[in-house]
Image (cartoon, rainbow, N blue to C red; front, side, top):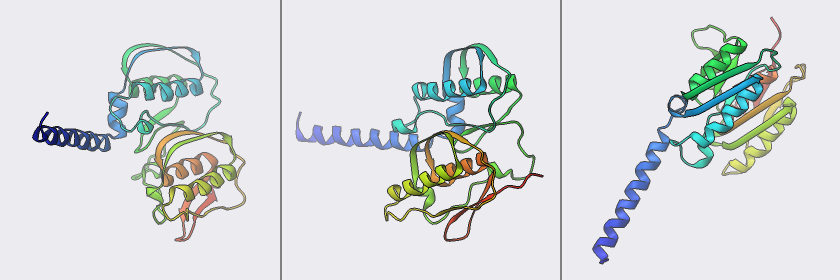
Length: 230
């Protein structure tokens, strides 16, 4: 192969790499939940926790539209577990969002597709701009601190926020990270989260909500304030 051909081949490879990268950046959560297709889904008396974990893990294997590998799959946030109703399903060639819908209906939950996750809850507050759908507060460059993987199982809010705070220093080019203050008086709710490729503010917002806290910032730190029951 002559020099001209080598240069042409190299340029073509760069073009393909660039356009593939551009396409991956354009993949949204809405794209994923519609385009990730489950060839077979079979549940027999599964709990909602078991169903969510299966969908979450299988979505990584079936995701052919996301790059890099750490971005593959769909994060699912379950607000409130321990439901006694079980799920039995036998589906073929079903989009991920349909699998989620059927599972949610079986146990009386609602679902919503958000920017970085699919959220299941007993009820979403009907407001002009629901809090969970509104972007969380961004402190400094926190939105540029992207966690490849977050996995909590029955973690306390203090343990979760300590992890976020320590890990943010590793993800911050200046190694400063963010300060997180948990105000006293909150319930001892345990947090279970499994998220992938998610910016710190969104991850912290999900953890705060599951723990029964409101997330704000004062220009210096993130603040988690206990939400008082109505």
